[in-house]
Image (cartoon, rainbow, N blue to C red):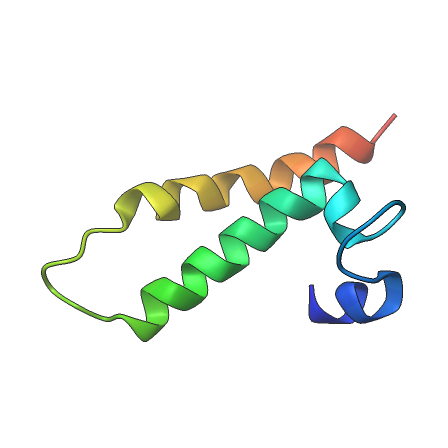
Length: 64
């Protein structure tokens, strides 16, 4: 994700955030980072974990 943001740019036309699959990937990576950083017993982020299942759909979508 970081390498693509550096190569393509972050915001605007034809950049990383212009593609909806990249936005989904960005959300999943940031949510996982927050989950890892805030390792609390009271905070339940299991819904974010289930969203990670959507990442392989990106590869399936590209197969003709």
